[in-house]
Amino acid sequence: MIYSTTESIPGKEIEEIVGVVTGNVVQAKHIGRDIMAGLKSIVGGEIRGYTEMLTDARDIAIQRLVENAQEKGADAVVGIRFTTSAIMDGSSEIMVFGTAVKLKK
Image (cartoon, rainbow, N blue to C red; front, side, top):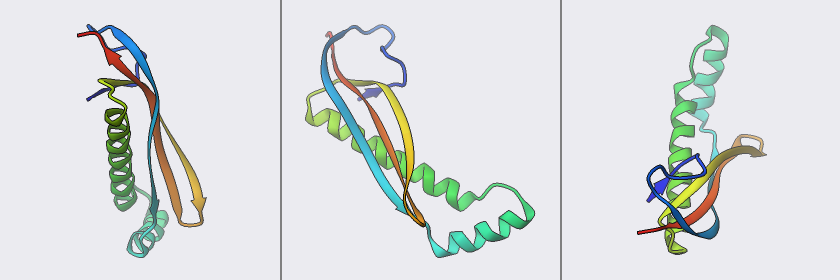
């Protein structure tokens, strides 16, 4: 599955727009990560535990986006965008969305 933040795929022509597709995941903080984050806030620097958590969440959201597009018979997803939001204290959602399309063969 091809997916891109651009509105087209270089060298390919869009034949049909299938529709909007999404993928999301809600992640909660881990107590161990919170302790390390608290220590890092004192001395500064990257909080690797959170970076890894958000990277994993992004990858899961993309996987779900691709699965949603495949279910609709799409060849690609264009114009993908990411958004995040706080769901409740200690957890957040990452969502990816885009337009599923069929490409000319």
